Image (cartoon, rainbow, N blue to C red):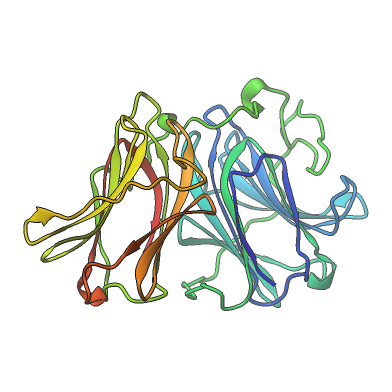
Length: 336
């Protein structure tokens, strides 16, 4: 069972595990906490109704400085487990990976192991993934066993009991335990403004090595957002010692996307044909860009839509060893 990425879904978000989940299933949730957000939750549920059982409730609480995990069964919440560490920040992007095993859910945040939660409800009953609260989602992906998971280390995480003391004055909410969300304008579902949260780890201009070079089936994923204030251009370059093998250059001042290469100290012939899906980028909007290296060309997808192919002008793909991103863009995650 696998589901391709779902881009920019609204919150609250639900999707069905059509073939259930089992040992090796991976769920990847990419998004950002709203600048005024307090809490959100990722739930593995036994149905979509508000009173259906929740097998795994992963609940970062920015107002409490901790993450709470729990299970709801027959309308009753169990004993809370919590971790007094919070890798989430208001207005900042995140990536949550939840690996399902026969014994537990293993959670990593921003590629670092965070915690483990042992099953209280059998896996065969879990059929729904839900995301609720004060977040904006960039993408949600469900991967079957072995489909793209590189087996990062998940060392033992520690959760604490007894439960985190409840905070008074917070009314219960459907699908969440009591004291889950205080009534506040902080949970405004308005679109997340990427200009409000430049991430610390991806400065522009950005440059990274592509270890081992490129080869057919290699995929580079870039998650980011176009600058919100009158952006002109940004570009993504795939480089090697002799120049630029692939130059991908959205130009908002010309309303086009230029593709080219820079070889032997000169630019080649530009390609400017616009895709049927249009520009694919907009000021202030998040995007997920995939550059797929194929035998004859690079294939570029943006938010799940095919944008262009660019035929290889450098025959030896393995020598292409550098990714570069510059211009009016905010980077939120790069996967090479």
